Image (cartoon, rainbow, N blue to C red; front, side):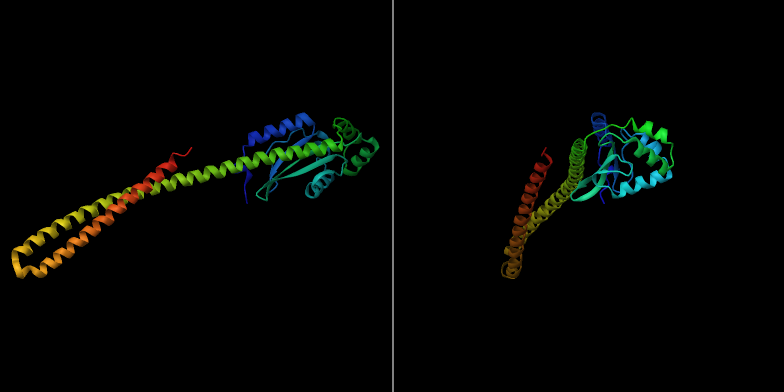
Length: 259
C-alpha cells in the first residue's frame, strides 16, 4: 500500500485546500487510505461539527454518509457534500472530503425537525444554519472536480519525484560499487600482467639454457617454448581485460555526469 504521507508535501496540500475553501466557501479536508486525517479542516462549520456531529445520533448519520457517499451528494442533514478519491497508478491512496454547503435556500422547518431527531437545540441549529453558504449544485460539483484534479496532479507529481529520487540514490550506490569493483579488477589485472612478463622472461632464460645443453636440452626447449607461448597468450588476455575495464569505467563516468 502506498503511504501518501511519506512523499507528499503536506504544507503544499494544506495551502491548496485552504485556498480552495476561501475562494468557494466549501469545506475540505484530506484523509489517507485508512481514513486518517492528513490535513487540517478548512472552512468547517459549527452547523456540521458542533451541532450535527456533536450529537450522538447526528454523528452516526454523518459517519454513514461518509462511508456511503461518493462524488457530490446530499447528506442526511440536507447539505451538499463531496468525496474525491486520490489515485496513484490505479491505487486509492487517500480522499478529499468536503462540501458543507446548501444547494438551495434552506427550509427552516425542515431543519428544526432534524434538530429534534438528533437531539440538539432547534434555535441554535437554525442560527448555525444561517451561516452556511448557498451554492448551486453545478458550482459545487465543478469545484469538487477541480479540487480533485489539482490534488491528484500534485500527489502524482510528488510521487514520481520521490520514486525518481529513490532510483537515483540506488543508481548512485550501484555506480559506486561498480567503480570499486573496476578498481580492484584493474589492480588484479596489473598483477597478472606482471606475472605474464616474468613468465616470458623465464621462458627466454629456459630457452637459452636448453640451447647450451645441446641435444640433452631438446625436450626442455620444447617445454620452454610452450611456456613462452602461454605467457604471450596470457599477456594478450590481460591487456584486453584492462582495455575493457577502461571502457566500462568511461561508461560509468558518463552516467555520473548526466544531469
